[in-house]
Image (cartoon, rainbow, N blue to C red):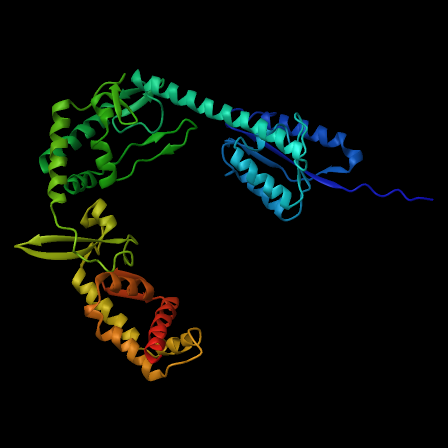
Length: 449
């Protein structure tokens, strides 16, 4: 008597997606409807061995234009782990609307021997005809997405041309009422004061200090979902963004083009022009400073130990003499009084770091690393004396190295440099010692050869 072979179990995972979050809080939403249709389809295939996996893979409020979705990522991880045999969706565009992404997904499915089914467009990606049909459908889905995006852009442009407010964070000085900007008189007074003080002082940092002393902050506002966003103290970035915002002239800007706005202006044109003339003059004077030819070998390595910010090279000239510094980036934005470290003299920092690096070049650890590295260079191994000569050459010729070569060696050997009010903390990089040792070993082998 012939035995009936058992039906192979096919583990099915349902994937659902909705582009917007609208309606997701309903008791029975679009994701539930998609899942119900997919569950019914899987149940109809029970005789074929189809069973539903318990995990849910839902992405509510995510676009199909990319695959950066948490539910889809979990599904792909389960596919790679061999937990899924078939993916079931309501429609193909629930999975993706991008041909490029679809090609990547099909490659993943094929590698894991996983099939893909759309319950309203029954296709099987294991056949060439199924792939062809899916590609055709995806081409239309991508075309629809691109046309929709073009319509949205055109509508946005048309609205901006009419001077309408199109959403986002309202600027300081305005509130949003019925999708229109209305002047907030208290904040508008602060905006005018910022423009006037910038004109009088001619310095962003000076204005920021005054604002900080008065406790002035950027715009506080409430999002559409009721989340309150508290303003923050001004820094250079937020201050320059404010004084460059043409909304205060009563204009609506789209892609660099200004149109008359529906809202009232806060700043008049003469004040705007005067402030921008000061900014242009500041930029010209800053541009005339000689920045080329001022080396900064510690750039990218040195950080402020007080606030954690990077320290960037800066300089000034006094009585014809150049003074170089490494300046805390946060202090540069918010004012020197906000950081206890603020700045360090570049010559002092570089002298200290160079001395530590040169000591490291003479250390037994580097010699040992160099000896070990020669084993990977050639069958011939130079003696310790030859290697010491090679290391000593870098040490003695350090001052003659080009700044770029000094910086390269520093970045090889140093992980980071922290500056505090108490001094410098130089942290060496072990792997960098081995890399430099290997280079020296190669030079030494060449010399003995």
